[in-house]
Length: 279
Length: 275
Image 1 (cartoon, chains in turn purple, blue):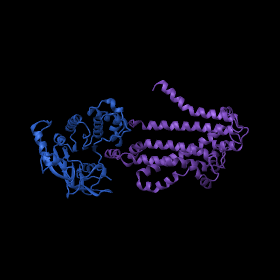
Image 2 (cartoon, chains in turn green, orange; image 1 turned 180 degrees about the vertical axis):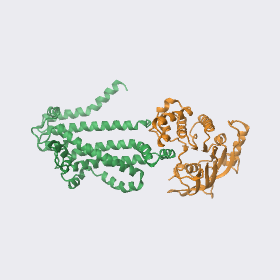
Image 3 (cartoon, one colour; image 1 turned 45 degrees about the horizontal axis):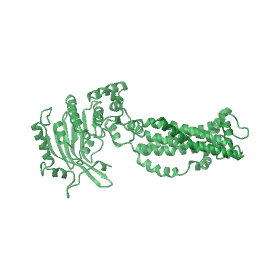
Image 4 (cartoon, chains in turn cyan, orange; image 1 turned 135 degrees about the vertical axis):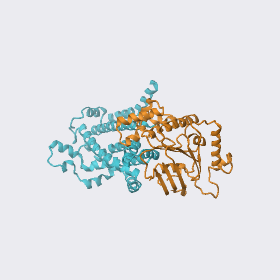
């Protein structure tokens, strides 16, 4: 690809964001509610400053709380969805047992389960379970409310389990038989054939699950009972009319989301390296 | 030694109900001999090989290896299939070393032996780090052969291993297989639909039609065999006649082989039907 075409593609890709900024600038000049671009940049430039006009943590603190929750929920989803997905893919009765329930759960937004999660877990967190912690540690652990982590787990669990199951089921029978003919045991088949054969599908599931987890956490944090997190910052900024914090939070959410997606895309490309290029 | 004693195999498929693939097959592959099973596609020869490999169990009868009934793939067998079925995510060397890896051989040792196996198949050492999809079909089959030979099996089972290759590559690989086999003398069960391949390779040709072994023809020509010599061609024609007993050397008869005739037992079995 030559330099001219690359420049054209960059210009085209930038056109819509630039237009949005333009509309925003004009709107903020004619309205007292819409924050100016400058005020949002000001917030973004000082991520550790506690907001004076807002009952919320600093931007960095909010992002850290959200990321921590997603990390825990996502990790839980990986360790539960991988074995269950593999079982579903390789064992017909398990598929028949779980597939209808998972399909039904899939079409409901994970955040809709938030009231159920709150009924189940209340306001409990690792901090309420482990007593006698120092104050700062209590602050961190209390951010990991079980209800919120459970909803993130659930949102990520479904695509990971479904993709793992599909990947495990679609491993070519002849690869499995080739390994069996070489004397592979069931465990060796799983480790040396089914897992690597399903790896591209699994990583796609991880990417989808990561994206859903990151989207879910922001909405879940809007529910009452949460303190901290970017979703909390957005609702509070809305209630207390400090809109520059809402806008700045959106920018941070976008940045972290893109970063997460980029990392998982890299992993996806790496795992699928052995595949012949599609022509 | 591989023995089939009155082995039958019936597949149950949703579309066609019970499909018999093998009907009362008895045969012996003598030790250190190269036995070819020859027949048209759908005659049950792949099923036969899968039973010998322990990948399927017979519906009735017994499959014996050295007098013991087969249950699951025996440890010292090597299998080469039509497509090779190399694991695409593994590099060539680790594909070849896989049999040793499964047996728990140490990494350095299995790499050394895998390199030896590659060299025996005249594969350049630099392809060890390639992925299978980067190789030509002929090279892939060589790698598959290297993978099967690497753990030093006593028995080699081959399911039309060269049928996907072009004519020239095929005859070269046949010749190389013979050289390797003459050095190692494994017991070989080789399934093919090519009469020429069978006559070139085999000590004995078992002709198979509609799930039965219909003829057992010893091939006594001295090796190396010249495909253009008169005895070779004679033997070839003999076997062609055995394949189409009603109308020898008749193209129409050959085409009739493919489909079961009306009123005849529909024993033909195709890959896609396997449950």
